[in-house]
Length: 424
Image (tube, rainbow, N blue to C red; front, top):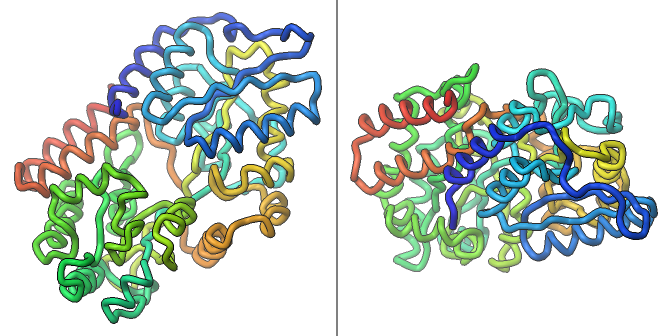
């Protein structure tokens, strides 16, 4: 599996080479239709849904032919960067938030302000995803990063759901250790995630800090050490598996997670992963607020775009590309096909129209987000180079949890490398 760091470096190099030119082989199809290309990544199920939504758009716009360019996640950015460098960028490109500043900053994206109907979209989410005050990208939908609880494991351990409005990290870890002890090797209290920048972002916010602050790393060494201290405490109290086992579990993804295999009571996942986790576990899962530093403090949670629709600044058919993006965002038929696959729609009318089609898991996600919406902040578009952060966080967290590096040394080196990544 190619690393995000490698993909990011290739993206930087490729975008630097980009010059003015055509959008590749855009033009007319053999039958006279305008052809636009659309790049995206995902699973086989996402590909099928996307083909359906493309067919629905083409039926309503018989003069436009949309050619989907599908890729798996590990190779997506490498492939896209190569195409952009060769003046062969797809007309409509899917980007996640860590790649947004990179592509916008190098002139690869069209400013969509006033070119796509955004009247019914969540205006706060839109504004939070601007780069230099311009709407280069529009979120496909939103998620929240939450704590999941597996009720079947809690029941086995004889433990009630915690009060997520007040629970703290210490309480979470102690409760998890209690559950592990009750499991006698059958299950653990929790699993942790060591490679997701969202977790330290939330933890930093609880301490009044930001992971990124004015183009620099805003999280302090003390906060990093305290964050890693939670992992160390989990391992030492057996609230979670040890570092080696956790690395294997993390590499296995949703299907091999402790929550998904009914071998763990708690775990942190995105809200749009509830359906998959519920399916693979076959158990009742509940989303909870993240633990806090103290009962009266904030939880640091935020609305995160699942991904973004963007249009190439070199597109030969920007009007048709914009029309396709408009359809994906604003047409209830498109919403009824995609449902929550790319996050819950930020178009209030579309969300209302499709509610009856959502699975029970998706309905639970909608209800959870609405319940805590007043507590949530908006995501911040990370600076250039942020695509490397997942790899950097993973390496130093694994070094600390495995006892290969002290927290003091890791914090110093992490800040040096992370700042270099986003300033380069």
